[in-house]
Image (cartoon, rainbow, N blue to C red):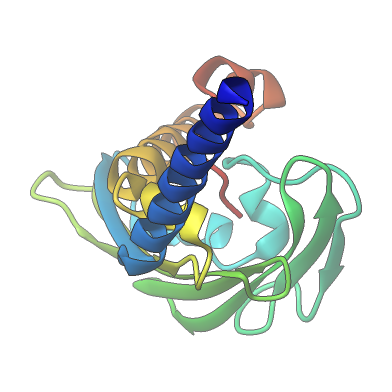
Length: 194
């Protein structure tokens, strides 16, 4: 009888902790934002083709490898890709606005909109001649997932690290012609991205 009573108390405490954990997760903000920038030793006109094409993004940033379908125009508004990948889930990336060669905006939806990201990339001349400052901002929302509520507070660090790594890959692509490889991704273990 005592064993049953102790087991009931333990289960009650565990249930209370689990419910408390979920309630806290629901109360935490689901939105997040991050921003990173880099100076690339090239004019904006040389960088921009890699930003305005959904297909070109795979040359410098981690991307799904399975079930990828490109859609829309090759470049500009509407250029996009859909995927259904074990690692990245099911999602869509689409370029929504282009102001050549200064700005690109895009939207990402994962798992039918359960995760949504709005991104902007702005290019401006850097202090040094022939160099461009690229500023990348992302704003996301994890929706009503209480577990991801705990993650939202760390997204500046996690996704920010991914943005930094991708900006470095873009710099190497533009300056050295070096294309991103999945081995680089495994070394850095980035947060989920487009």
